[in-house]
Image (cartoon, rainbow, N blue to C red; front, side, top):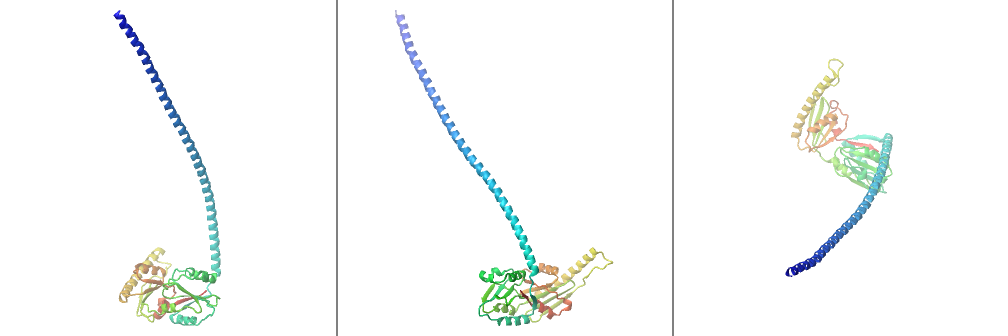
Length: 351
């Protein structure tokens, strides 16, 4: 009896435990499905977000591709236009050069003249006598490398004839120039002085402005003059522009031309170059002596063979004012007075 009761209790206990265990398992299964569902929902949301991002990226990519294609098209169009402009520019430049060449062939100075110090002073005296009540007399001082357009006013510049401006631009003297110009072209000429014009200036008035040029010409420069030729050169120093205080003539034996027999052309040229080098050594020796004895020097005026001038330039100190002056004067046929007159002369150009 007792054993039966125990078994009944055991059975009842088992009966009560079975439903509890099944409910727990059931609830556990439900909970797992919910979590899985939530995870699926989360993944679906992420997929949707990725799809949206992908569509956005594709849209942006398409826009960039359109812009890139447009940029390529624009660039190609720009290159075509640029090439067309290059061709047009080259064509116009060629036409301009042709016109300039033709105009330069037709345009010529009405005349040129070399004026000594005495002659230029008489010339300036005549210029000072001109008077125009309308104020049409233009004077322009142009240092080396200065254009008329960069000095005078635009309205005045336009009143100067193009032919005159073209001729003026041809002149590129180391010392600069002075333009004397009547707006009505009764007077139209330029003066290249022997000494540099240091600053630009201009005036449009009733008279020509000559005082600045007179000041340049009247200054007592300490000048060294070199006339250089192979075999015969001249060095002179003056402190007052009247006479040379020091004169030195340097002579050397230099072969003048190639004989038909004896030396080969190459050997002759080598021997001639050696003769010239020897002559230049003698010139430099005398030059050093003259520079030392007559320091300070305001400027050096050089004329003669341009290759020899170049060699002397290389060996002179950088602080010297050097002026190259074209001249056909020959040392053996000229006196010191002739050489000084050439060195200190002015050049007149009728435009």
